[in-house]
Image (cartoon, rainbow, N blue to C red; front, top):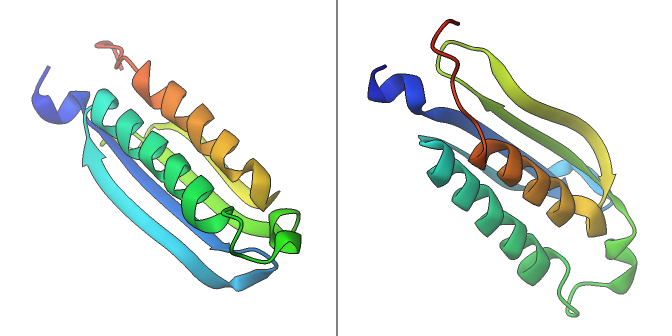
Amino acid sequence: MSDQDTELIYLVEISRPGRSEELWWRVGNVGTPAQTSAALAELARRVCRDLLSPEPRRCDRARRCWYHCRVSWPDGVVLDEVEGRVQAFLLAVELWRASAIAGSAIKDADT
C-alpha cells in the first residue's frame, strides 16, 4: 500500500449559529488517519472555545448551524459524511465523533 492509500481527505464547513448563509469555518486537508483525527478533535476544541464561549450571545448556543463534514479515502470511498442543520452546542460532539471514526480507519487492501 502506498502512503496515499493510507491517507484520508477531509472537509468541514460550519455556518454561524442562526445564520446558515454566513460561513464561520471551512477547512479541508489530507492526512493519515491519526492526523485527520487530531485535526478534527482540534476543530472541536476550537468550536468550544470560539463559537460556544460565554462571549457570544447565549441564545446562539441553541441556534442551528449548517454543518458539513466529509471524510473519505483518496479513491472517493466515503468513510463518514454528515450534512445538515445542527444545534451549535452539538457541533463539538459531531466533530469528536468524526475524529474517532477517522482515527480508527483502516483501508481494506482488497478495495
